[in-house]
Amino acid sequence: MLNLIARQAAKLLPDMLFHQLQYTVVFKKLRYNPILHILTRQAYKFLPDMLYHQLRYARIFKHWPNFSKPTTFSEKIVIRNFRPKPIYTNLADKFKVRNYIAGAIGEKYLIKLHACCSELTPAIYESLPDAFVIKANHGSGFNLVVPDKSQTTFSQLSTLTRYWTEKNFYKINRERHYKAITPCIMVEELLQQDGHVPNDIKFHCFNQQGEMNIFIQVDYDRFGVHRRDVFDTQWNKTDIRMGLPNSTTPMDKPKNLTEMVALATRLASDFNYVRVDFYEADGSVYFGELTFTPGAGLCRMYPEGTQHQWGSLFAE
Image 1 (cartoon, helix red, strand yellow):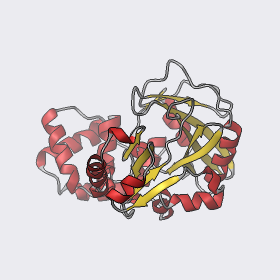
Image 2 (tube, helix red, strand yellow; image 1 turned 180 degrees about the vertical axis):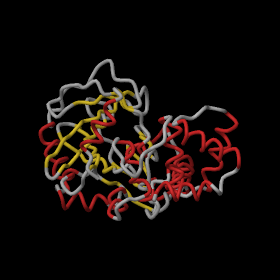
Image 3 (cartoon, one colour; image 1 turned 90 degrees about the vertical axis):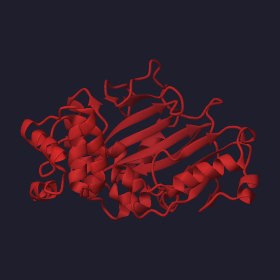
């Protein structure tokens, strides 16, 4: 059925893109051409969601995805992009998910919220502390760490946050569950660990009929020299690499690792797969977000077998 829809949608494409798509289907790879690359990016805007994701997958992984019988982690994540469960929308909303987390594991795991508004106003700006994190609720990458308020201005933050809220995040990667989120601006407490912004500790949770398999991704220095490692639940570093180089100095085992694993397991119990993000700061655990389509499913993983290993744990 998916291939039939794709064949029908292909009739709408310009000749050059149509032939590029045909070449991909037949030879299972893409030949790079800068003109075709630009044309493809423009033509994407007019494609149905499913064909859009098939073509993007093929560009990244150099072969055609199998959406009818998916076996890899990325194939299964990409299918979620255009066929999400309704619950994903509220849980991907960084503001609304707070109520869910408070009910599931308790308010003590929520980062203190200084403000939440549809638009940053001078009065809200003046009420903010000297240090904070400002973000939008409706996507990824809409955030800014402000360690010293005196080094910025209301005008700068107003312009930036207005740019965020005017962005339709669904149109960036066509992750459909973000489409219905109403944008807002959130200002949170700036967490500190040993005087620095804490690392992101992300739990990839695979739930197979109650049997939980977890891999822990650590992102270092997201706003500087970004590096990434993957550990098991005993904090043994794996050889998995996800899109970025590994760190030359892996993070020490978190003091609250056992608690975070238990919390991630509890939050993931209702899903076949979800990524649960935490921070550890000043001896406490804080919830970050729930992610159902990390990287829109387009992150390359090494060793190559990791895609099939994670896919085999993902019974969607």
